[in-house]
Length: 173
Image (cartoon, rainbow, N blue to C red; front, top):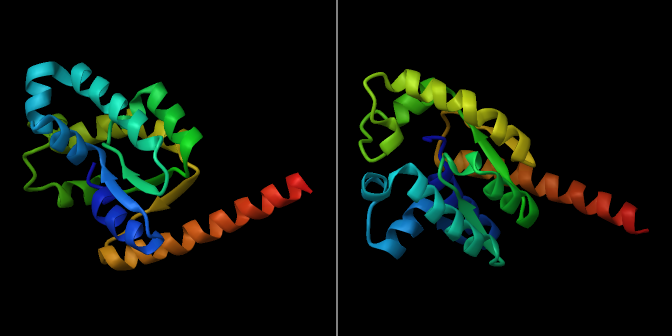
């Protein structure tokens, strides 16, 4: 949450000539309801079921870059889908950066707490090990511009893809 998945993802999709999808935004478009309303009406469990159904559809497509919701990784099926159908990048960010970026954001149901910092710390304690276990690539975000961050990540991904290609060529031949 607040790592830049959507803003950086949009830039990366352009750089790689991919179609961009933000899971939360796509779910809102398909249902006609905000994430907050889905949480209110169906609870987190109902939202997570919808999220998994959507992720199945999106990960089956070719030529896409998908920004998942922050809690997507908490579901084992979601982790399996992500690992088996693409290169998974974990945008790691500090709690301090999250607080700064999300300061005025009132749209995130899981962040509606008296102590937002503690809530983020609690979420990170559960989610960070799952992100790290699922990701093919860990990229630490910093306070540079979106474009500079996307450009740096683009270079790292190209390098990783080149390495994977070389490993596959050695395995094949």
